[in-house]
Image (cartoon, rainbow, N blue to C red; front, side, top):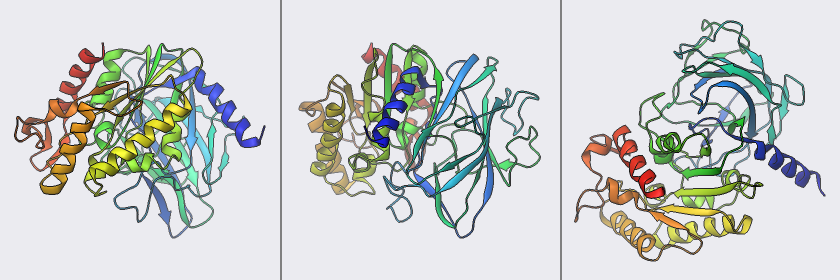
Length: 398
């Protein structure tokens, strides 16, 4: 067996023991591109699905998941550059994400017992396990210092409206408990690809989509979007993982690179049923300017790859939400949803009609209900829409 296959098998064995500890997405849709080397520290506050004594582990993927804008800077499958984790810590972040951590609670995250790690382009790897006792109602604070040794592209991350509170600081401040060195981060979420905790679950439910799945435009630290509300409604015995990414499109996933690999590594785990929710299409029709036929072909390609990986995986396909499309974009949107509703696609187990929940009455189905828009000009669903969709999904799902 080759070195790459051995590493994949070892990663899979670890994944069987760990499930996602949070409903926030840490998918990477951008990449740091600097004209000089840098050393920088990032501290992010995350609400976990469960508190108390926990054994955590962090999985890293040094690649861009999905295309940002038109792909001039970041595109799906792009490998990150070389960089170094100088230090990483978890801590009790307290009840308020104010930049500090509770005194005496920081625990070092190690990699093969080392506190630092060199990261190669495109590499995936796990941290060692690390334990913490996190009081109910407290955030987990994840802090790490990253260093580059050459200019150019380096660390993949998520650039989008902040859904969690985060801080950053130039230099190495990972072991500091105070907030004195840090400033509030803006549109920059720098986290490992997977934050897992040791737990045996009955079923894994994976949410795979764009900014609407990610939860963009809902309240910071509110976990109001439908993926988070569904995970909360199902309870911790369901291993729910949100892999939504702003600007993402089906043809990103159809490249069968880093982003789709996140789903594939969750498939075929022993004694665990896996269900995948595919919620894609808005960005394909919009900035991607894809036809209905092209979008449906990409969705079918994704489904086929996932079923080849593990035929027992159940795939739940969402209709494409209304995004106030007009003219030709509206016509393509209608064609796609008609196909999904009437014929579905081979390999799909069930179809959930999210569009029917969010849409205005006919003949304006392509328009989103005003009360569900994040503002009068932005059709990203708000927290009320997240609540409505989640309630409908849970009733339908059960």
